[in-house]
Image 1 (tube, rainbow, N blue to C red):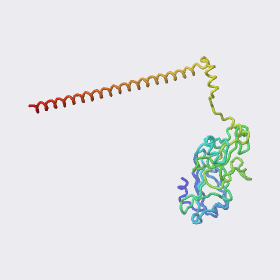
Image 2: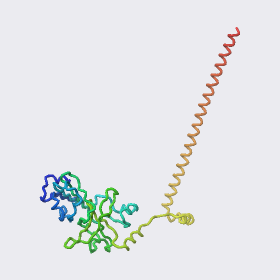
Image 3: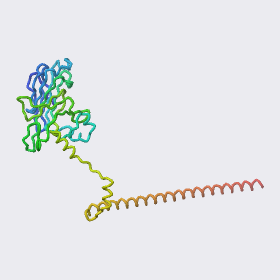
Image 4: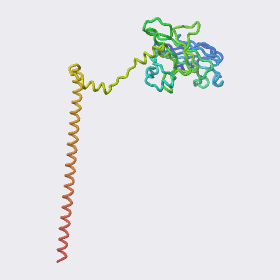
Length: 309
């Protein structure tokens, strides 16, 4: 969609925008000189990008000779994976250098792409010495708490942490992205990320303090059933306390036992029928052999009588 909006754009011309209820897209064309050091407003007034002067330092000049296409997309909801799913992917958390209990996104998803007008491909903006600053509006705080952004939630116990969507790992990662304070004169109700590369960015909910993180970890429990608990259940068995549960357990156990007996009986019957069939076949073969021997003996006797005459 953004590439379609780029068609017919001229460097220096106001970017084309498409604004809807769930996604805002802007596409414009710029010269390398105008792009570097510029502040780009997000589509529909959603967010912004501060481009450092050295943003294109590692790009082949031939790729920017005809200009640079700037594609900005602001999704108002999470269009990628749920960050909370990473809490059970300990390996992925270690790869991201984090051991934090992650919550849902506290922002929308903000995508930034610089494209070569000459080749139509995305420019490899990565490993910048001076980071880009991405401004992403925080979602409304439904708790009603009066918190100083980027903290939010009951007791201001949550904060938004800058992350980007890693296509390879399929997770929200932090490498090359840092959460920073709002620059002077900028909207304090937004999240600000200093990142050394371009991709899709978002603010992930994390505990705002070590105490809150500890509480998050301790609140996660794994149900187990020890041998002692099993023994206590058997010894202190009381049917009347859990009539429906025990009735269901006994009914299922009885059904399983009945099924086992029926299947065992069927296996026994099938084995018996197979044995009978084998016995009939063997008896038939035996009778055929005896008949063949008797026929041969009769022929030999007839030949013997014929020779004697």
